[in-house]
Image 1 (tube, rainbow, N blue to C red):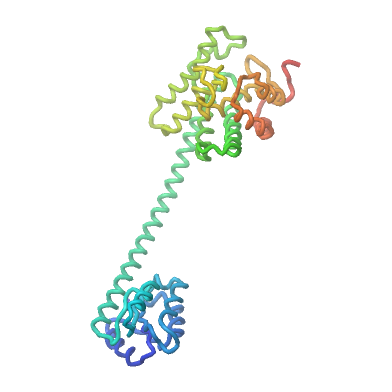
Image 2 (cartoon, rainbow, N blue to C red):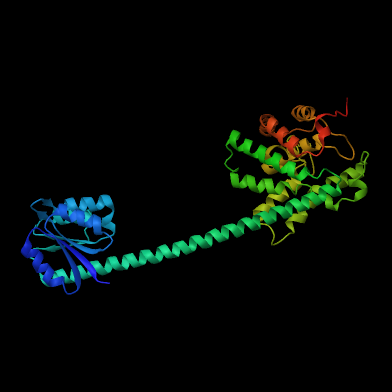
Length: 374
């Protein structure tokens, strides 16, 4: 494809001389003024390969053309060679600062015009080709990235589903309601979002919340290792049985820590923290280690309070369901152990949202109507 050169000079003889030098190799367009050149550039910016622009013309100077090309971004698409008879370096400096790629001194030497035009044209042709290749590669990478994102999301959902399935298996073995895992996850998300909004905790991000919510499904996975005679016992456990029941925290963490190639290390760590510590209490009166205060990981603290709440409002083999109002006050009043002031405040702030989720998801309608102490 023949390259096009726009020559802008009000000196007809100068234009003719340049035309004679370049016409064998380039298609030539001429302009005798800056204003006319601006119109040509606007109309033909996709076809012009190089502009040879006189610095000083009767209707202004070449800087006006450069200024217009900067405004329209044409300066980044078309190389400009300045023609100048000036001998001051500041003129050349100004032209280069405004985007001209080179300059040609007057009186014009044919060899210099030919070489500098070819160099400018080749450089910009190479630049355009390179930009086109980069754009094509970027498009390919974006398509591949979209596919990877879709695949990653599918894998993430599959892993989450696996966690939900394992958590639900434990529920049914424990003769708990089938929606316990779903409620605990939604309760956890509500509490975590409230904690993030209320306390601006830097370690708690939307992504981290997603991880905690997914991990919450496996908080009781260790109960798989507890004998049915204990897990399903309708009456009070003996001291020995209770100690064995409490071991589900450590056993669950051990199970998850030994799983390879399924979940990320961060997800496994979060799951293990929740399994191991969701029965710890802020005053150190929990198990299995009697941790105190914020030595209990935040994810475990979040799951801990919602797990207690769901246990209160749901029917179990050993108890009837408490009404949501009474369950709320039992936790606030410390009847179910001590939670951190921040966690308890979030629980108070989230009361309505938690009750809405409980009402929507609970299969145990007696949770709102039956008080076993009445």
